[in-house]
Image 1 (cartoon, rainbow, N blue to C red):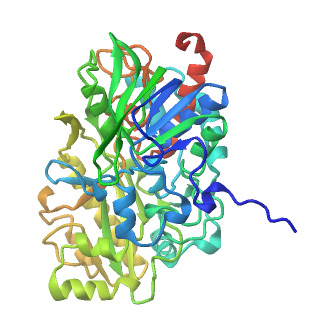
Image 2 (tube, rainbow, N blue to C red; image 1 turned 180 degrees about the vertical axis):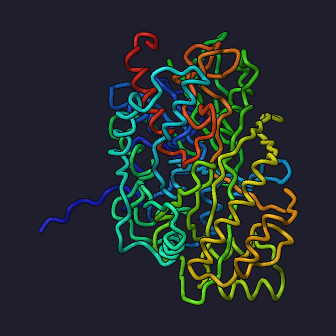
Image 3 (cartoon, one colour; image 1 turned 90 degrees about the vertical axis):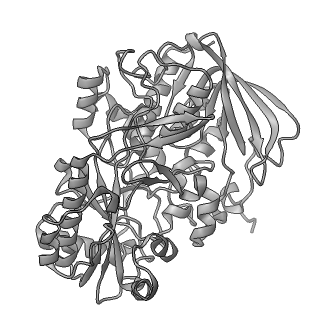
Length: 519
């Protein structure tokens, strides 16, 4: 019997048409129809759509090409390998907001939880109304969402892979009579190893690494990994390519890389896209490049139960509590490895030891807040630095959200809940939860994180109020496009991956419909 060949991903082999620091020998100059900086939700989707239509596409990614077999449950190693700055990037403000973004082929889709939600209709309508965007409402976007959902296999989780932590979340929501829905995730029979944030070790999660990137390569696209783009090359106001360098094993600067293209796309995220444009000399007539930064502030709770939880068994976020979606609050169960919990806990010494001894009976629950304030990304010595001040309104929403989520967890049977507020004792019952509403909690006491950065090159029809047009083309520039969450005119209140992919699909269709402009 002849054995069938295994896929490149399962073998751990670098696919053809992918170049790495090991194969980029000497200075390199390439030509392409389209050069895309970034290989995440926006860049990989756009690359696959354009390559399938016959365009010569080159993707450039600063991070490494990791294969499925490289991903393990060793969280510290995976964080160093897959996260920019080891996951310790920070937006400066009160409180400072820690944010995480991927730096690998596949971008942040490699380390996200896989939640795949369409942009809420109210948000699309707001974009049409406030930003003057045309053909952006759900009847216009539905076909793009459907195409994305087929490509990344958006489905509900198989029931047998839902862990105890998520079952307890649902128990509490049902006891309160609150709306809870099963999550839609980009997965093919997920095994429930709860390792999403550190690279899916089975290949079930259909990140860009195992969906759009292979599709782009199949249709002839090329991918340069381990290459940092220093600047976009401009001829007057026309983008003509990019210039960068190979990133060595220890971060040292390697050989020079130039890719010339008829269309240049920045798809490196809401933090790095404005920095790339700024250090390339691109100026927006609106003066809003890098401004309008939304973050979806997140906080987490640790709820201890008498029964075993073993949160590492089962899927990451099988459900979302949507009862308070109208207030911009979403709840979910999000297991976090013990090392990360210990590092971020307010407890110290013996108290921390007791807390960690109960890790296997702890539910880590998280809350997302649709923010009302915006910050900015400034480019300092060529590098981006985010600044963000949590609005008092949003701080109050976080306190309310923590109280509501604590009510749910107590209804599910929790006996103790540790909050994300320094100096606030652990909650031990409903009386403690109600007391949160009257307790003075300063913003400086809050531990706030995020993985959703948006809005710093926002779309809009008015070039005096926006950075890009309705398809991501930079105002007052020629053949220069943005294709990532920078484009969002406002926060969207849900996980942004599918919105980015749908907008990329829409932008690809626009390019193909107007191809004569880019010849």
